[in-house]
Length: 624
Image 1 (cartoon, rainbow, N blue to C red):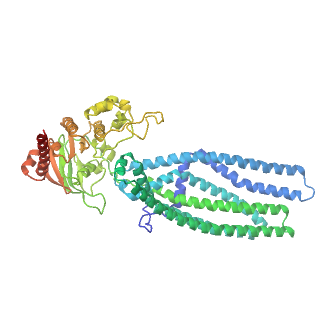
Image 2 (cartoon, one colour; image 1 turned 180 degrees about the vertical axis):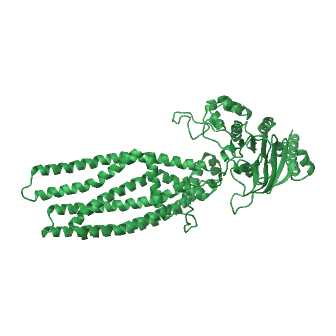
Image 3 (cartoon, rainbow, N blue to C red; image 1 turned 90 degrees about the vertical axis):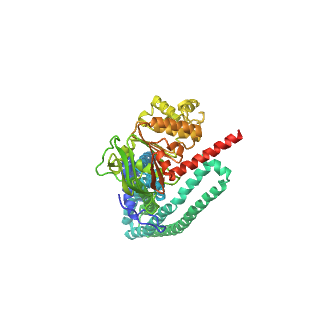
């Protein structure tokens, strides 16, 4: 893959102009892979459409010259007229076939391009690129390029057709007047350079405004999202976000207006130039015919050639400009599909063995950006096999970041994480993750059936109802799901119907606590894995449900290697080992009793929460 592009005036990288040929080659390679038959058919129609007008013009010249001369043969004129008719039929049929081939190319290239794009994004092992705004801008433009790849093919083929037509008619003009042919060509040169400049400005404008376009999607999503609707209506935020959307639209429209004015000026001047050249050439031809320098057939050929050259030049210039602009845009597609993985592949990959000794963190330092604050600062930690570890601390201490590093969604900048003595960097990320089960603090809520939402935890068991029901029971969500209108086949969505028909019953939306239990069930589908990580699994649960879930998890984690991340001390005390994370470091470590005896940060956190519960209990007793 080529290196990064040079920064633009706004400091953001933009596509290089030299990437145009790469874009053209890539699109045609994509089209040839997606639909070779349709592409070959389209090329054939280009040859017919590009050469038929020239042949028809020469046949017409023959007819006119024959009619104005003595002793013409009717049979010859009949064959010439029939030839013109057949060429007309060929053009009409070719147009219909070309339209059909274009449709096939559009469907096939869009499908193939978007598949390549999604596969490329899915190949990113980590999260760092997906958290870069500039990468999202490129991704948005890459999606647009993938959807419009067929336009580049159509523009290039249209340009090839223009070249054929123009070459034939220029040859005809050269026979009539070499000087006139040179004048017509010279008049087209300014148009070509102007269109190329305009296409480059338009591609640059798309890149400059890509962040505004992305914000529009964000604001539009806010204003139509059911989850955001509660706060937006309660706080009266609708007009505020709508105004911000309009401001971004105004910013885009302003730049488009500036570009459109430039196009109007250029195209008006070029149209006047082309008309003046054609008019002058026609006047010259009529004068030559009147003085006997040209025959009537020559004049008819001159008129056809002038019109054909002008039309072909306009088509060619437009095609070149369109191809230039689309190829520049396609550079974003190439960037995304060829982007390097944010987690380097190990030089000598090691398959992670079943955990048998320990997971160790040695002097681990991590921050999300090169100029950002350190989230973890020299963390040293050992998690012996078969033990449960609780990680506690205040919000922002680095607990969830620790979870992401253990899942190898990121690599530490310094230090190492070892799995039975092997650095996680030496293990393929996908193989490592097969040995881990996780409940994240903000789990996904998929617009799928209840059974699918759980079964996604282990795709091999997606169609195994017994496994799914068992995981749901372990997460204390089986009864709730079983009571749904279609049981586990109920769609958990207000956006999609079960069979996507208007007659279908609407889906069901779960409560926050039910979604949390469902996410836990999804993780329990992988209960046989070597490491289970629970990142605030009690979020959204009431006290009774949380206690029940933690009792159940305690039973399930007996003898298994597990990590519980929590800011609630009562749920952490049952772990074999507890560490306190503060300011990105391990501040304290030990059992509940040891840490309480130490009288440090853990004891303070535990005592503070316990006092809160005691106050609440005293209030209850007073009320009674």
